Image 1: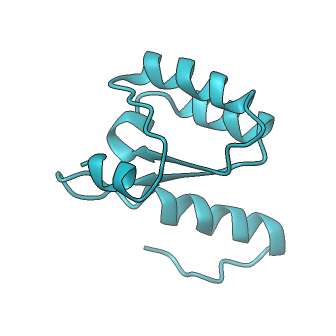
Image 2 (image 1 turned 90 degrees about the vertical axis):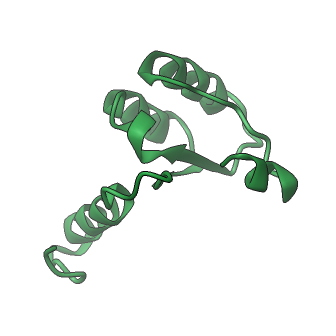
Image 3 (image 1 turned 90 degrees about the horizontal axis):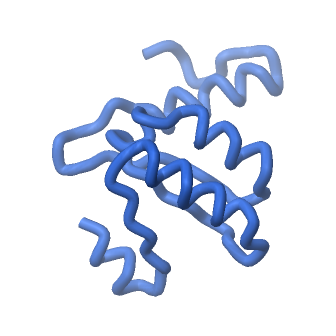
Length: 95
């Protein structure tokens, strides 16, 4: 699944579980030239605090992507909450 991203120029940093994700995100947060971080929904669900910490420490965009097993709509829900928090209105509607 990650080979497609590697093929278009992304640097791929594999993380198989929540612990390795937390470790890799901490390292990426200290790297100023990181602009976009994509994390699969299944691994992101194992370490939500690591994602929150990364977002506090880095200006890079971090989003979750579905796996071959389907989607849990985590990114959409996070975006909806952020918009609602920012403007006080749920512009995207409930699920």
